[in-house]
Length: 238
Image (cartoon, rainbow, N blue to C red; front, top):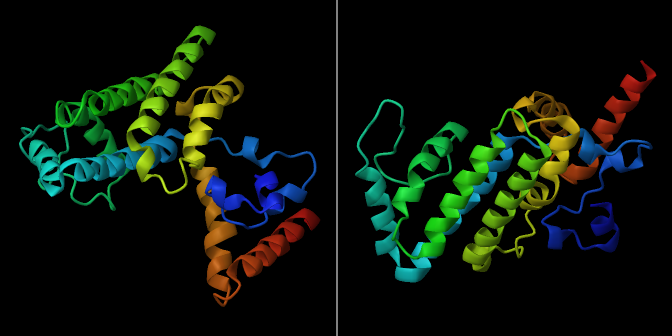
């Protein structure tokens, strides 16, 4: 990321051109210190992209009618106590929670079956295979190899299906991190189920939300970094 920043090419990697304070701290790799978690990377991240791109793909193919057909299939799914389905289909996904997306995963392979083409159906099958592997409680080296293969099979289909809808040519940080780094992360830190977002949520509050509210909303990034720097120096002195 520092290289993109120094070269002035942050836009190509879907990054904001903001200097990262942690780059100046010796003997620390902040990207190793903050491991990904499945909820933000998959449920609320890549799967949300897949749903959004699917709607665009269907609309591009046959207009609103095919999107409506997808929603109608969801509406027709019988209700069950262990399954949360939305009466209006997927017309609005802006407020969906991780639990909502996990329920959608249970039915989408049937919803898109024979809806457009085989690749679309296969994309959702590959997603579920990859997602189930990510939930394993233990990994042998052979399991990690199978997991990496499952990730790459899904990612290749994802890019093939939805390439035209990515403004950044799929320079998506979550996609890059998932495809290229998650298996090594598991080797170093253990299974994904053991990761927690509590630390990062707290850091987001103290290093982003509070400094933003303290700013006058002009040259926000510079003011926020000064506030964070003051806080860090204070705690270092303690």
